[in-house]
Amino acid sequence: MSSEEPDVVWVLEGFSKADDTLRVEHPISREQFLRLREVITPAADDPWMLYCYPVPVELWPAVDAILGCGPPRPDLDYLTGAYAADQSAAATGRRER
Image (tube, rainbow, N blue to C red):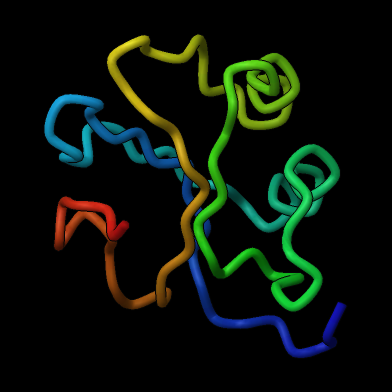
C-alpha cells in the first residue's frame, strides 16, 4: 500500500433498488477500513478503495462485525464509497453507474 494516505472519508452506502437514490450512509473509520479490506478485496491498483465496491449479502456478517451497521435492508444495494474529506457523497444523492 502506498504510504500516501489520501484525504478521504470512507462510507458504506445503501442505494434504493427502485430508483438508485442514496438512502443510507454509514461512516467507516480508518481502523475499520483497514479491517474491511480483508473482507472486500480492492483492485490491485486501488489499495485505498477509492472506487466503489459492491457489498454482497453473503459478506454482511463480516461487514457488520467490523462496522456495527446492523442488518442489511432488502430494498437497498450496498457499496463502499470514498469521497474527498471536505465533500459529502450525500450532496449528489445518486450513485454513478
